[in-house]
Image (tube, rainbow, N blue to C red; front, top):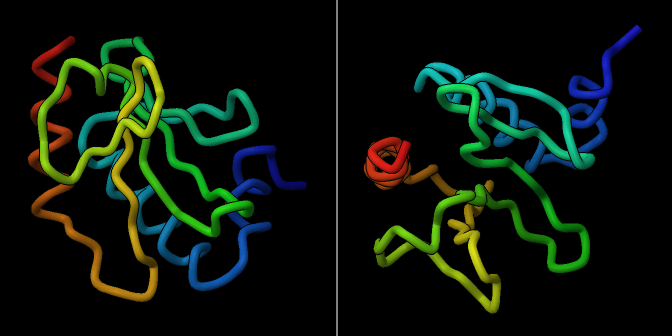
Length: 112
């Protein structure tokens, strides 16, 4: 039987599912730990909440939200009325901007 985290990824529609599974593996390769909380995949750095991976069915958008985003400045990060979190939207039908994601993750890690 699948755990809630596995279920979360496998219930996503394609191409979002494949993209999220790749990002899941990539985020863990960055030294982050994964847990299923708040009905989404949450990632931790030094035991503190770092980011989360989500797909909004309302807006049909895949994104990574950074918990300390309000302390970060990057042209690809969007706040959109959130007080603390900034997100980077990803298009699962195009190549992922791994270089940009790497820059943002490195920037975020400096805040911990």
